[in-house]
Image (cartoon, rainbow, N blue to C red; front, side, top):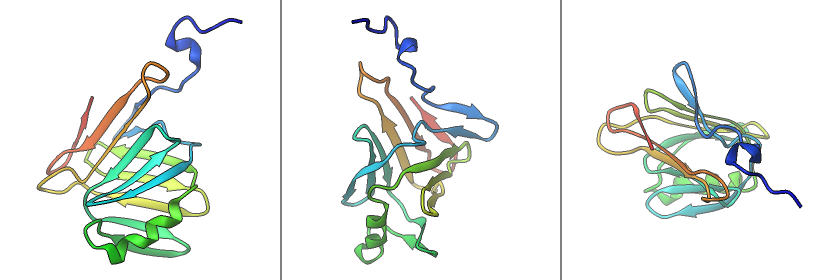
Amino acid sequence: MSYPQVMADVGLEPLLREEGAHYVLPLVGREVDQLCIDYAVTLVVDGTDTIRLESPFTLHVDGTTQVVDPERLETVAAVLQLFRAVVTRAEAGKDGSLTIDFDSDRWLRAEAIEDGEAWEIGGGLPPVTPSYFIAAQSGGGVRLS
């Protein structure tokens, strides 16, 4: 049996790819397999990557678009329809915006806020997969690590 000698041999796509005014996130083709609701909404993708939304965001499901506020439980129920959704597009704008599209015409959009991180995304299971982290900064922009 032969094992990869370096991470490049594993065949992973680059973690964060910069393209003009945004970063492409390594989530496409992967499934939301966990949801967590506390004072934020967290989507777990394939058990390794987390999308944590800490401020109101726009969600489109079943032809309806609404604002979901993680601190108002009556707005959060729609997020349950993202369970087992497959990511088709995932981009973090350099302005602090976030766009994630899912199969079956579902999507979410988040914008940077003035006083705090609106969202953060992290992933990886070192040493199996490299880790990454990106978050919206207060007032706009993103922080990478």
